[in-house]
Length: 250
Image 1 (cartoon, one colour):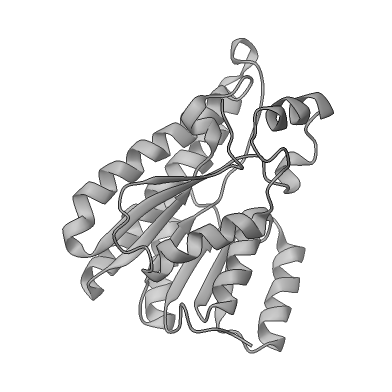
Image 2: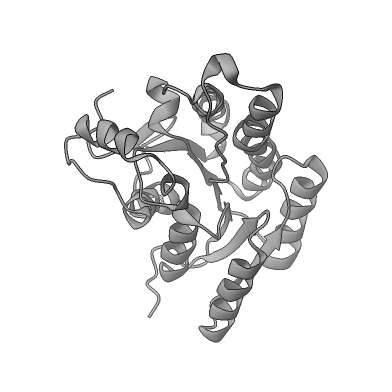
């Protein structure tokens, strides 16, 4: 049974077929929202989720495209507005890693990560906010990372991209607050997703050694932290970066 916390809200979630994005799709759908999931490559997973959505009569859709493609993003927002009538929530979750030591990092590794993590967030927010303004408000939630706060070895590109999104979050929050649009970020720590499965054991142990709870978080725990920001239960929260990291220290 669906609850009503996000009843009659329309949400776009990028990177919705895996990890945190999938958990957000599930929790927002359960909370009553019409959720549009965006994905780039996971066609088989998207097809299964679409079949699940239809079998449970959950409103929404899945659209395939690249968030760093301006034409796709523009059409995405127009299509959501035409089909569902409004746009209340944008979760910029799409992200990739191409880890390497900074001195060995290639231009391609820099460009690929910056395009998806930084440019994709910028384009989606820029295209979504005018629709939110027209209807009198909305919520933009950018999924960043503790890497963007502290910087991480061998993640110069990822840390730079997420750090830039944190700056963008604060800028957009200040610029659009008087229009009823709240912009915040959530910074997960070491979350058990497909992205962390390939990490060497030593890297994982070192990270968790500096984490209060001494364990990985779950995608569901991150998604649960987004709900108050999306629903308006945290209506006095603006321009903030909420760490969901188990108490990560450095």
